[in-house]
Length: 149
Image (cartoon, rainbow, N blue to C red; front, side):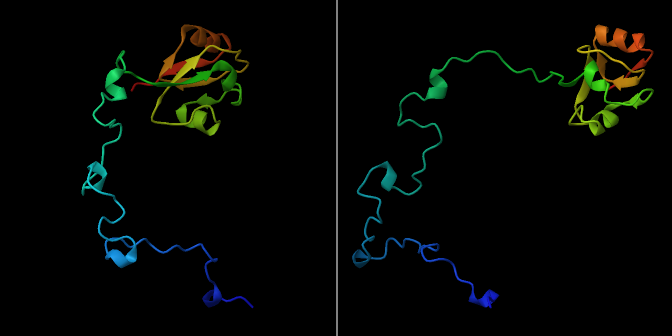
């Protein structure tokens, strides 16, 4: 019968830590496996990521293009064909869209686009609509409501 106190690690699974700087008899004394002189032998020898020995680093050699606007507003896109998953006559808001698997996050705005055909009468609440999507929803007998924020 196997007991917890009988369990042992497999042979070779546990390795002893290399002990350095403990005299010449250890085989790792004096220079402690670092060699003689030079940058790598010193304490605090770390080189920053991307350091190329004093050569102009790659990140500085490559041209820089464009910028990222901090005012950009991101939207999760939902197409009309996806709205067909909902039952006819239901109210669709971001919470119900998430339950249907149309969007992933509630803290990112939702925009409805006109890809596909809407076959049901729905009340759709979203942050933004394309003109064609708005027309298609109203043509199907549904209503469109904008969410502020």
